[in-house]
Image (cartoon, rainbow, N blue to C red):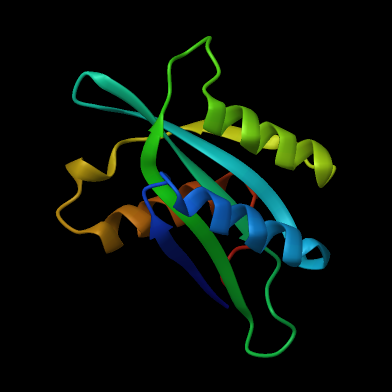
Length: 129
């Protein structure tokens, strides 16, 4: 099985495309996730839409808007409220995880491999077959 993060952008206007991907793929929607991190002295969040693997090709996409959403613990921004509304509309819970920032990894691909390991370990996505 191939599991790959597909980055749409950092979430300023890209989140609306992420929302449309979730809505148009409701039949394949596995999870909605918010990955929280601290970059420098600022808190940021990434939104992730996880789809079930394709029937043919065994490919599982994880669409992400990486670390562009301002996040203040205990407070809800407009983008976070929109993500919560999407989850309610699609009858999904938002899985929230605290993760390391992508900036500590030498390459973005290493960061995504790290996240895939975390998601497999917590059984949010299937292990390699």
